[in-house]
Amino acid sequence: HFEESVILFNSEMDLFEAKRMVFLAWAEVVEVAIIEVYTLLRPDGREALLYDILESLLDRLPKPDLLLPIATRMSGVVTVLLAKLREQSLTRDVMGGVYKHRLS
Image (tube, rainbow, N blue to C red; front, side):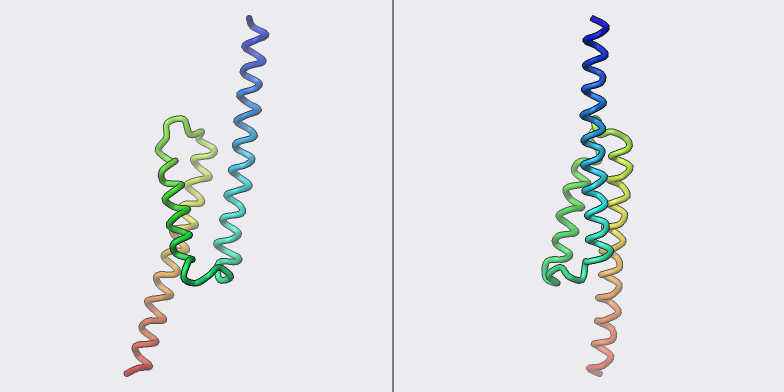
């Protein structure tokens, strides 16, 4: 009975580690894409993509079975996405102001 419990525990730990590694890799890809190659994305789809990723993450964050290391990393990705949306909003406001100024 003890041996079965140990095997089950080890299996659960292996599964947790696999999920954690997959999510960490995905989070790094998202962050690199948002930080480094954002301008290469289609301009008309950039914001929608950020909102889609945000919605997906925010739907998963309050789940009680979400493990703390994954939730912490998810929160970091959410922060990066929100910062990029804010940056885009400010850029658009500034460029809009420059554009309006040139028209007057």
